[in-house]
Length: 58
Image 1 (tube, rainbow, N blue to C red):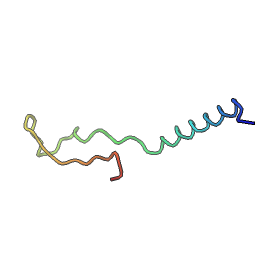
Image 2: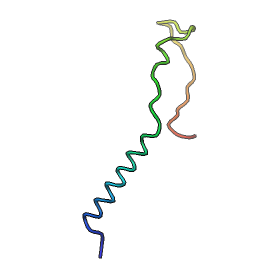
Image 3: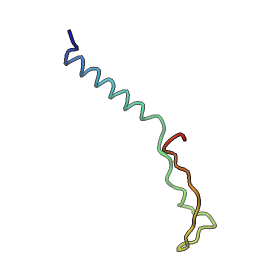
């Protein structure tokens, strides 16, 4: 005999709750680095700097 519909929904709800709780591990990063700008930033003048993408562990 297969899985009953009610048991299936229990598994789905439990998995969704676990996934939602796992996403609450780390808080957001503050978005305030340019509230107090660095001394070398001049408004209207292009400023080029290298960045790093943090989307993957590579």
